[in-house]
Amino acid sequence: MQAIMDEEPFRQGHLIVRPVRPWTQGVHALLAALPPRGFDAAPQPDGFDDVWERVTYLPGVTGDLDSNIEMRSEQILQSAARLLRRYHHSSALVQRDLAAAYLWQLPPRLPSEVICHGDFAPYNVVVNDGEVTGVIDFEAAHPGPRIWDLSYAVYRWAPLSSSMAVERLDSLASQIQRARIFVDAYGMRLEERSSLPAAIVERLEALLTFMEREAARGIERYRRNLQDGHDRIYREDIAYVTKWSPQIVAGLTN
Image (spheres, rainbow, N blue to C red):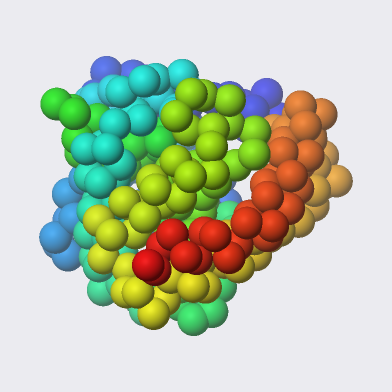
């Protein structure tokens, strides 16, 4: 059974198949509830049994900022932010029905405004014709405030990280500029933006706590993450965002 639980998702025709988790039922309920609320850019559930779950495959290109040059374009950055805004609008309409009804992988956060995607990053979207057209991998979905989800998205898409070694993404100035483009396209109000660096730090601290707890429980994925130094990167990025918080706020608000 552990071998199955460690399986990576795989494609089977028009479906993506992955091991069932305790939160699968909630994720499937969320995916089923989105299209009637106007959001058709997520996979659709195709059922699950005691071992496997199935969702529809979304065609398109995916990748991360350091490995796929297309993912770094301003058009993709803006379209990603607009898609996240659309997702938040639709999930806000269902969060009251879903938030307390299901188990989620990550702890719910208050206030419960939306069902956060939980990992809205370049590697979890699909791109067609130079625009983000879909979002995938809702395993980390959980109830929370919009800024909880938005802060992590900005962290990943800017990216506000000291470890980014890709040209034109490795300077604080370029990262702040991309963060500004993202929050502008999302439609984040100016008066809310000063709280974004602190929200990023809090989000990363919560992620560290979660990873360390899961690794201590013997979950192999998170044990590997710690062995590979993911926790060190997050700690460095917490210090980086904290140090440059005034400059980040100025760039987002001026």
